[in-house]
Length: 462
Image (cartoon, rainbow, N blue to C red; front, side):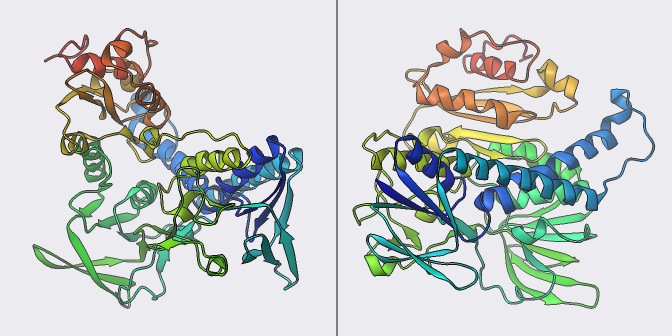
């Protein structure tokens, strides 16, 4: 079986490796760098910046309390950029090694379908090669969305890609969009002394997450001096002698925000143009490639995974879909349960969520119970100096089945997997509360929050 994979991001390279493990002859085509958006201008570099700024903030705020006394602590932005680039190179090299180990051929260039069994690959030097294949997996990812706001072409207006590598930390930054990406960049630049303002059209930041954990982030943002304008529309961006001016409107009237830089953080859109999909009849709906549960398009033998199919735009979802597509092609189809996909935000506090929010569960007709445990009563969180968060379960009141888990606090993105597994196994509260959790850990709060659903939390003063 000859398989060609178009795109070497977290969906594409994982699909290629899984197909090779199952005995396929695989060629991976990538026009830029291996690792895609996630490794090069997304998940990995942003977390490098967030890790350093978290340490910096921790030392500045709580150093003396922790018993650490130093001279004035500062961040060397240039060195941080070097470390970010080094980690990207290390991860890219790791993917290269994995491809070689699995005997996957790699071609550098842009791919375009010329038939249902042929792909034209154009290299950077203009040379063209025709690849024949039996099956193809499209994994071309996504790119930052651009909306028609007057003034977005002005110098100083940047996307998330560019915000990773600014030559210096700006004195002020206006972020248009209060989703995951916007909030993570707000955390980075605010920690470094930049005056940050977020403008969001919706009533709340990170609207897909449970409101209770988002409120923990709002409180931290307020304490850090980050200004947030929700239910606010950007009318235009103007150039001034001092920098940029963002003109907004809301129910409270017009407002002007002065900033050195403006970050467009209004989501991402699938990359489907220029692939020759019209040549083979692949169906596109609202800019994304339509697929079935096995990730196969309307054209037999052509699959699409990750951001380009318009599903959940997360790297770990792309990887899971890559495995699904490879196994389906090789005759070993396996299911994927999208209920168990965790969403993570690497701000301070970290936010993590899986399953239904309280509001979603009620909208779906469940009789809902919730259990909340504040991290100010968790010993490990107190030790870490990060006790302002909480753990919240959303539970079916009829049978105590776990419908959702939502966490704000340290290690949230690491321990959310317990909730994902609970939902996957259709676990009930009894199965959680009778599972012993180690002490002292942040994860103990999961145990206590499960007890709290029935007002039986041991370490909670009611």
